[in-house]
Amino acid sequence: MSTRGRSVSPQSRDVDVDMDKQSDTKPDAKVVVITNLTRNVVETHLQAIFGFYGEVVKIELPTYAKSGQNKGKASLEYVDAASAHTAVSHMNGGQLDGAALKVELTDSPLRTRART
Image (cartoon, rainbow, N blue to C red; front, top):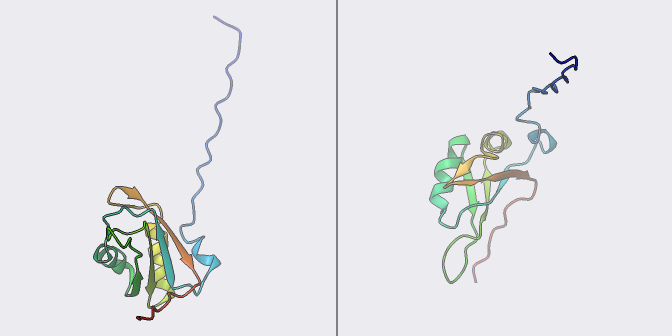
């Protein structure tokens, strides 16, 4: 038998992560920005999925003029801030159509487009 000692295994840090930590930085934010969308996601997909967390007032999904496919980013405005915070805490890192989403809050309101 060897007289050499064994090294101690590193201790893993099992720390609970606060899911609402990001939400606390913008308490009045009602707009959610979603990035990393796949090209075949449409407004009805976003309404069905994110509408689960509260009433969505407005959806902005920029598309390419020639193909009609989205540009990979969308913004949703909720009726109240609590719904937006819930959506971010549940959907950030979640998957839609096989892609991991990045979902963040923003203070900027969605623009109303003037039709000319």
